[in-house]
Length: 115
Length: 111
Image 1 (cartoon, chains in turn purple, green):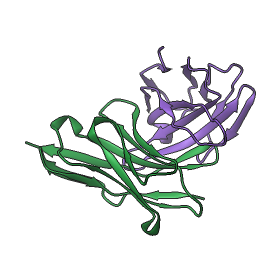
Image 2: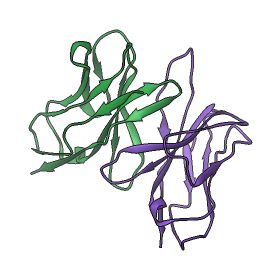
Image 3: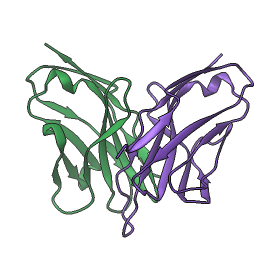
């Protein structure tokens, strides 16, 4: 059971380039999330999904896109990279049961630098 | 919208000393509360959670937290800190399908 996996671990992009951050979970969780973490700012929610085919914006969605075609995968797309998107990105998943907000399981993160 | 405040950005304690990390939340009803720990270069790991019932909850690695409704607080404690506890700690509150995180407290342990 690998839990939540993310690739790549590190990436350097030039301004204007695009890339996709991959996230996969093998726990059959219905909920998946993308966060960015900046020093002293905690985690900010970018997008989340409550199931395959359903996504919604979080607190800081501008400049990003997501899709959820399967339960397992939740990729995050950056179309035109900007220096403001330099950050550490975390993917997480959870299984909501009986109306309770359950714990989220986090991946190891992707450190992205945009130059 | 909910919010979480962790008043201390950095805390330094001596190894073997006790620890308390503060967390205050804003939420009208009974909150779902969480504490996570992040070691350098790692993802977040759940330490403990509170949903209902006993207001003193036990977690992993010898940590505990106490929910105090009257103070809107959920402070994390450990009676004796180990050097391996040096990390960043995040408090979070559940909001619908999501978690709202505090800004984090960085714990340094001096020997």
